[in-house]
Image 1 (cartoon, one colour):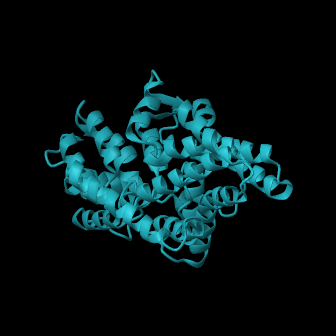
Image 2: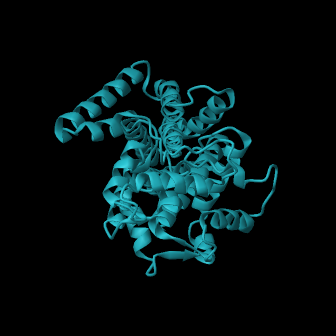
Length: 373
């Protein structure tokens, strides 16, 4: 992960905890120096790191980005007032309440997930629920009217100034979660349809790779042993694969047609849920988790994973395009050994491992993004 992203995460978490503690200490002691310290922690740490990470928030960006900017700006306003009026219980309480919007986002997210509510829009719903509950405590009875007006105005200005095309508008308005590298329903329907055309018998004792080869041969109309890169790009679009991956695959596939090995490794397995690769109730230490994910990606057992496999994880994790490119630009040979994988991208393999575990348990869970505010 890029150094600045890692620093931002550490600053955000540590400053958030420190702000929470210093606010409570001020409530208990009435010490104005601690109050001013709490305000400084917010102004110099938690608020800037929150602003920095707003671009990669999940949920419906039309609603979430505006809501986050409103909350962060209100947080800054309260912190500045507390810094200059450190004896004011009013500003101390307001800053503490705004800070708790972040806390309640996490609590409500876990609660809604536990009871199974808002499966497809949970991130947006939890953020807005927390905001609509706590903002009136800070701004009074008109708070939610002000908040809704701000969000509506922000959406209108975006649509008016940017004038996005249909694809950009869909990305702006639709819920964005990090488990959608590919639309699994479309993927599974396509596989089933092509399996029927390729006449793959359900009774035949064929493994997954053999099934993939049958469908590859079906797509290989001229029987050259290769599929044209442009045709595969169209296939990825048909599967509703994440744009960030399509863009990178397009750059890669322009170098030539795609042989079966690359088709199987990079395309066929996009929608795989990894159930068959996970042993029930197996407990692993950190390095074992990393090794498990690494070995799963290292299909040819070469001891390396290539750049496209890592791109998939980075995109699913939620890094912006420019950071994915910047991270990969630091590697000269465009492949990653286990040591590089283990030491440099811990949040990534940890996320992948948890997703594989959840798939094995029969439930797909969305883990709240630790980069979010």
